[in-house]
Image (cartoon, rainbow, N blue to C red):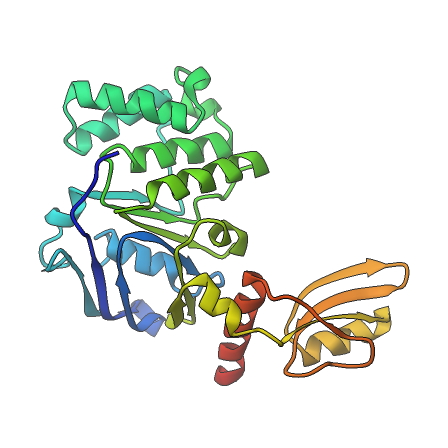
Length: 299
């Protein structure tokens, strides 16, 4: 992997409104430097819209994104030459094998033949597809197709790598392998990992941006997000018939039914009832805290 000059992506008050008045993003601003940014939010929060704008596929309605001092909507080619992108809905050509498919994308990215062959060999090993590289992609499982998608995004050794819901369809072992790969890719490039799965970002993200209803809620380090919920996470054992009322009254991250009752993990300013004990916060608790607070504010 190459080393890059200091790279920076600036997102300034981006808004996106689709036909019919559907608002996908509103006044979204963010400054992103080298490292792994976890873009975390519920389904429908606007993550994929933002990723498509940053990948120069969709134009913003308002605002702008700046790469290396240039508005990417006005002059997209400078970013496209150093961009790697894995969209949420990644399609493949079923009749091509993995090598042919990656050769096609390498040519589209402007790689010469020798460089392309070397990169393809490296990446097939990285994504664990060497043994299946001559098999038609139409015979691949969903997880294998996703791994081919990851390989194509890395062909040009990008300065900006955008991956949108990349672990969809991956089994637990593949998921772990992908997280380790992302951790290795950080360093002096920008990696943006967009997902609604907290565990995808907690092991590798150097910073996290939480998005809800098209708006940025907070952008900070995992440690700062965790500190925001210290003293507000509780574990409580309740009766089964009490569970609906508990869920209605408190943001609840987990419930487990056991012989002594339902073990509930929830957020509250103070102990929710007799027998509730404080618990160490996790990133999932922090995520629930910010998103539930935003929903309450909108209600």
